[in-house]
Length: 199
Image 1 (cartoon, rainbow, N blue to C red):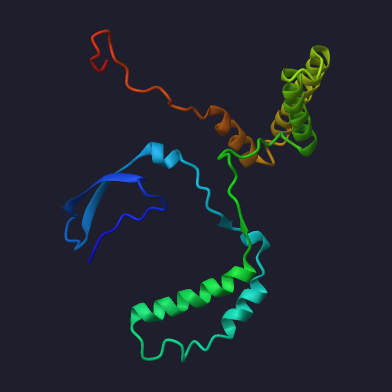
Image 2: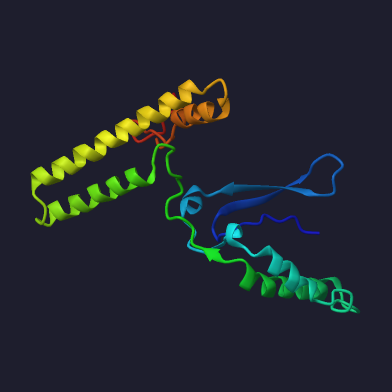
């Protein structure tokens, strides 16, 4: 029996070591290191979009397969390959794929379609100003309008969360915890001699 470390990307883990069994267990403990640089790389593989899936057709296609005769007289590996083949064949027409978002962060709660349009307009105005197609005054007005609308939207969402905190505590504390989240981007510190600082 092998104890495995399964990953969806090559180079995601390193320094895999067997550390002996834990107590009376017959499984070996596996120690490994997750490589952060590889983890941050964004996947460009398409993912299945189950929200737009046609599960009725999927069930119908799998129901047509003679499951009692298909794996008859075959071993576990061959039976698994047959099952997998039928599953993937039925999945293709029933479950569409979608590309993963390029950004791992999700849209903030105060960002609506109107604000998204304003932000896009501001970016386009910036490009136009850089290329000399938009005047500075016009660009400045667009930036001010977008900034004011973003500030108003943030204030409104915070007021509504504070007002409804008794009825909807989860949304309030989720918003607060997102604000409190910190990122640790500071690497190891070294002194003038180049030695690692420990204190």
